[in-house]
Image (cartoon, rainbow, N blue to C red; front, top):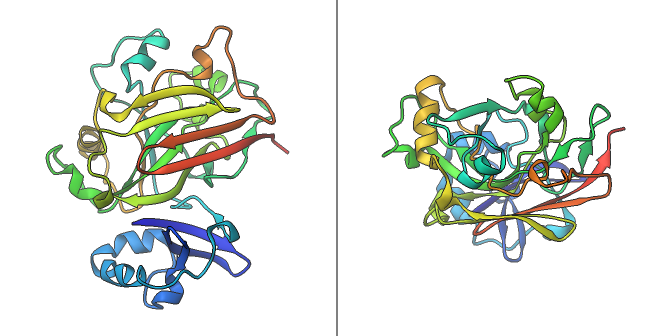
Amino acid sequence: MRLVTFSDDAGVRVGLVTDDGVIDLSRADASLPTSMIGLIEGWISHRSAVERAAARSVDLALDAVTLEAPVPRPGKILAIGLNYADHVAESGQEVPRRQVWFSKLSTAVNGPFAAIELPKASTSLDYEAELVVIIGKRCKHVSAETAHEVVFGYCAGNDVSVRDWQMRTSQWLLGKSFDTHAPFGPWIVTADAIADPHALGVRAFVNGEKRQHSNTRHLIFNIFDQIAYLSQAVTLEPGDVIFTGTPAGVGAAMKPRNYLKVGDITRVEIDGIGTIEAVVRAEI
């Protein structure tokens, strides 16, 4: 299933995307939660109603609504760094022996087709195509062998980075958390619809030029190892977002460096999931 948070003149709602358009789940069944986190939290009891809704005619054309970030305000956004060997090499660093984690603040969340801001504070704006994981169950101390059980679904994401701010200190949080710099979507593809999350092509384009092209089979620490590691330290909750790492091809590694400029269009594609795209605009 492809689940979305969408908006139109009637407000923000949760929907189910089919090949024909969007089914408004609030119209399909008034007992269903009106937020994505609510739907994920109660998925065991709500799933059958959503499956029944899938048999309905669509309520809206996809191009008649605005797709918002599937989880508009996640409790946590966690992101792993240096998780593809080719990206580690282009960054001039050694392959990490332990997972390297940072956070992106929830105010960085952006819709899958909303503009990305070039901040007033910097011109070192970069892109990072990534597979995004959405957590489905509250959990702690999960094993790698059972981690698949707590995954609700997957999205495409862009770990937008302000490189000079990122590299000013050993802590990357601020450089990774500018407003609009955590777009993901365009929907959540539920985990049961992805046969193998470690066999998905990942691509990024800038103005139509392919900059990144890899596959999740090349992750140094795979998705389930990531969840197992994180859950030793923090309680993961429904709707938490995990950015799983980016491959080679970022602007900071090009010679000369090739950062995003106002008017540039970034596009991230993940096989089996979909595409997100954004124009770069100047911060107002």
